[in-house]
Amino acid sequence: MKAARLVRPGAIVIDDIPDPAVGPDDVGIAVGGVGLCGSDLSVFSGKWTAPSYPWVMGHEAFGVIDETGSNVPAERLGQLVVIEPNIVCRSCDQCHRGRTSACVARQSVGMNRQGALAERLVVPSPFAWPIETSTAEDLACVEPTTVVMAALRRLTTPLPDAALVVGVGAQGLLMSVALLERGVAVHAFDVNPERIGFARGLGVQAATVDEGGPRFDLVVDTVGSPSSVVVACRGVQVGGTLLFLGLDDRPLPLTAQGIVRRQMVLQGSLTYDHPIDFEASVATVDRGFNPGRVISDEYTFDEAQRAFERSGSSAGKTWIRVGTERKPS
Ligand SMILES: [Zn+2]
Ligand SMILES: [Zn+2]
Image 1 (cartoon, helix red, strand yellow):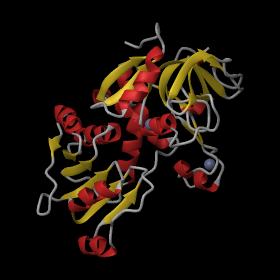
Image 2: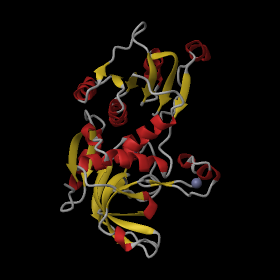
Image 3: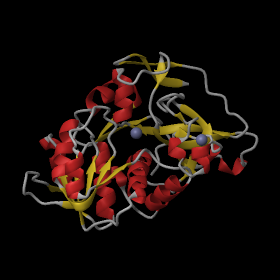
Image 4: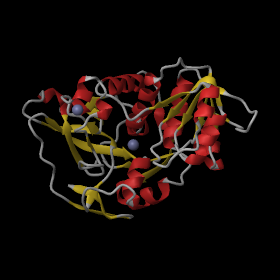
């Protein structure tokens, strides 16, 4: 099969590799398309070191089941599915607690297990979620939508009437449309005016965030950088929640005094828990929610190199169409 492989940081080559073997509990999937996000860009740039080179990247994938393992009902053949790319063990302590996002034996497609930017992908069958036919753009956004929906599910404070989203890259845009869908007015801040322009097209209001500016019961920091948290903290109402989604590893300029005086609730949210969060996001998309609105750029499989090079500076989210004749609706 054809696969887009990272041969060294910054360089993708498309070549033939052996088809992955389908185990008894697995399904084989003809990949239709793959969305790109910040974690893919970290692998591409070498910030996250791939387990080996050449490496197949990509994890936000959908496709059609074209092979079933011996323990998987053959009726699943031909099903349109989205991939839950964090394959968890379902037997460690965290998995038993329901916090599979903290599974000690987690394998992640495209990070430490073969990625989805290939003609075929194999995953254990419970991690291939059947979904009604919807647009390819929506399908490419189901996985990152699950991330933001899981974060909202985990909130310990009620959903407010208005929220501030700091950083409207792909994850911030998805958080914005998920909040809008629930009737929350979304204000957004980003240093990139093109991104704010794109977000406004989705119904988001541009936020002015300065001392004395409006405060919100919920502020979502999708960046997590020393400068984004300054903006985020300014926007938190007394008793409000500051929700972190970004995975920056630098120390933040937060003081205990600032947190205590503002009586802030600090919350972090990592990916999602199996199976409840994918169940919920697939059902939401099946009911007509269109996360694909956040996509601004589409590339063909052969343009994978360009897709990675440009996606960091695009106004919305980027995806790569992989399958040719299997384009859903
Ligand atoms: Zn992602
Ligand atoms: Zn586990």
